[in-house]
Length: 133
Image (cartoon, rainbow, N blue to C red; front, side):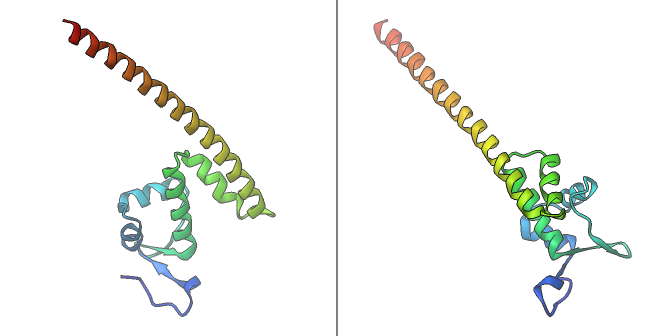
């Protein structure tokens, strides 16, 4: 359940439970990202109140983690947005990270393909030897 029914989407507020449910993660994960400075919810007494911007930041953090990026890199990209000409700088950094990650993945793919071919060769030799016995 959402914390309020705002008149505009920009005013939306979310509880930690809302975000955990929306993104299928634990509240502990969200608190971890807070400890790392990636999220900064407002407080109402002991309760955390997350804004639409916090929700967007969490979405970006989770996307970056799925892509295998370290939290420090994710934080850097998110923080760039708030600087002068930040969106352009953020996009350029993101493009650079994408190229680096793609290069690593393509190399890993090539390594896996070589390993699979080697397994095929070894398996064929083993089967021939068994057949010859």
